Image (cartoon, rainbow, N blue to C red; front, side, top):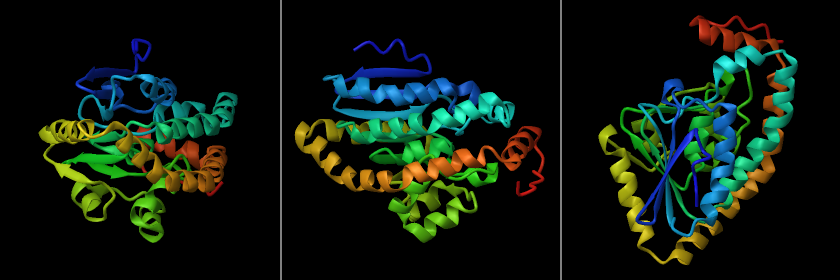
Length: 267
């Protein structure tokens, strides 16, 4: 399998383990259109790669992923380009999650640094998580004036229950690694310089086990995640796209870039 077309990702395969690294450290691995498209497609290619028994997903540099590309959001807000983006995004996001959830090989998120917004949901949609003790995690969509619709409304309630999930999602609240581990949002917390090593240790353990037992156990558990996905995703991401048409969204994006408090008008 040739992964050279994935210029926003680095894909390495060794000893049955495929390591996928989001490789845009200059933007803190913000999920640009290019990275989003490649994250949508990569799981289809990995599914066909018979060398890979387990996958590790991580980010280059000091951040797992800062989430959406806020600069691009600010540029597109209220424009024809923005509306076209909002029409395409639900289908692209649905396919990304479907491809990840349907992938038979287990995926370990090595959260090497902060995971925010879409980046948080990308990590949490993986099958197990190893988080740096200095990292933070949050679905901060509401602070940008938009609905937590691109996966957060699906996976957070499954992991920590509806009420606690709402406490985080409705406030855009940030969890430290210690808190995330305590509430069972993530599985393992280790020092920053041990995140990849711990993820590889878990991956090696899984890779040594019977392949079909591993794969089909994952798919069995993921059926309940898929049920929740089918129940929630379309409505939540449609609401998210609607809030991208509000003036509050544009104001939040501009305020973020200008490092000031947003002045919301509820419109």
